[in-house]
Length: 141
Length: 156
Image (cartoon, rainbow over all chains, first blue to last red):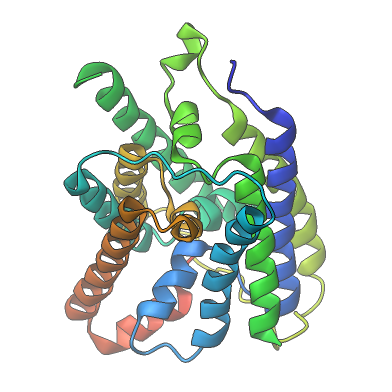
């Protein structure tokens, strides 16, 4: 487990949890990124301001860390833009059909002990693990 | 004030993704690759992020339930309880996309800061996927149900 970074993972996790709690305390909203982003896209949204501010804040964090001198390497992405586009479509469609993603179900939902979120998180974890097993160890390697 | 609070919360969220390394698809895939368990290359960091995040959110939400939010009349707690087919199918499809690249919506958007062409393509495709879902849903259920759905949408 050479890549295991428990301390930074715990600090990061605490910050993510703190963010979810503060968003509820201030605005009364669940910190589900897919839902917040989708609401920004929808033509009949009347609450775009806080959603846009959330998206900007999410981008500003790593940007400011990079400007402060912390290493911000380019993310490793698949070579094929078709794979990337298909994955993006699946993430977009799937998170809306399933009403949430890693943040909304995985953190906020499970923290509420919501059976829906526990089920959804189990399903997307297993589904992602199967895909990684197939793409890394069965097809291509 | 709502927008400012939202910005600050998202900034903290983004720092959490950055510090934990969850902003990097390679690190997320290192967790999702369960064949790394027998070979010793598995990276359990994501589980630690979730455990720490859940501990803080669980306690914080329990306190937050007792009072209305500062900038709204009441907290918009999700009310849906049924484990239905859209939930499970949607989660399965999302997991496929997540496993293909290692990006879920939060880290994907945060990675826009890098101006990586791959990330930009991913986020545009993600937006199109969401719009496709919303369009399909509004066509198949009609306006009244659509408004109902968008009001209760989401656990997150």
